[in-house]
Image (tube, rainbow, N blue to C red; front, top):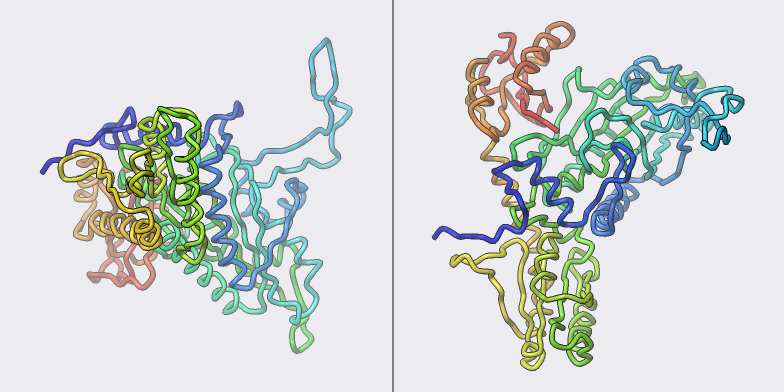
Length: 512
């Protein structure tokens, strides 16, 4: 049966995916413009999702032996000058502080030319240079290794084209930095973090990803190797959802990060860096949202269950509120995913219908509407955000005894989390095409579909000028090389681009 849904948003994904994305953010009260180009105000529901991401991921980071710390927002320009390749990669995005005071002149605040800093300060775009300088002080002997730190911070990269959560001039993230005795130890760290990001994205965010190595042209500035997790959004574009970098000894040489080894000789450390950011919130929106708004996976939902008392006739119905409070108290004694349930009673004034649709648009996993008749019958009326509609096209409200719901709630949340992942994984698997054999077919595929997905082709891992030619060919089609999936093997014998012997597969896509 064809289901006719109520679309709570003013635009659908099929009509205009970019406009739909902005509508979800607005209607779900996730974020808004701040008055500064490229910077956003994260509203409580949006920041609450980020807080959940932060809390769960921080736990995993600490379980792998890292400690949190904090480094300054301002970095002396001379620190970047030590690492030429690194600074070149970020030079066009750096915000620079040159003066430290304003003054009043003709009734206006202006920069005081007498307050020029002796050395310009860069507003942190990433922290390799300042953390590397600290490592050079902290590290003396092989006994001091490994050094494994992480910080939660904001960074600034002056983006030309901005989009909320996905690419903003200021964003929030975590950045891990480590130093190791050997290349093998550092590579183990790099791949351990890649696996941690993959498992976190798929477990907590219900967002399937493909982990693998980036090609030479996509490496982090100054890195020897960069690895990523790539997620497919519903419009078929790729989102780089996290990166882990093996920096080799490049930064160690530039910043004198060295130690006395077991034989008493001085050696340079092998370093890594890695991070994920608030773009994960954008990934959640575009992976799971529908034409009624956001769907939040239960593990990262600020409120997993929202109770709406139907107070239209009596805004101060103490009996109804007490009934709702009893249910909430019972739910708080239950747990899902190893934590107590997170439950909100929405007591704000307003009709139940608009309040329900408000929480639908926010993506709360389970919504309970409770009226006087429900209370009298010891019932609740449940609506699941992952399956709003029945076969008749109407809202799939389900009435049940409140104690039965409390008993089922943890399993329901676990089921919602699993089904959200399975739906996204099924879409990812269906939208990666592997039968494209030449550039003409590649062009036809990407120009012939509104949302074409990804293409996987055989690859010989070209470098230098050979890779530059490949990148130029793809640029003409607005395509990028995403990564070479872990453990991939070529399906044929020759590289799609060069005709040289193939060694692996590579993913091609349009991307955010």
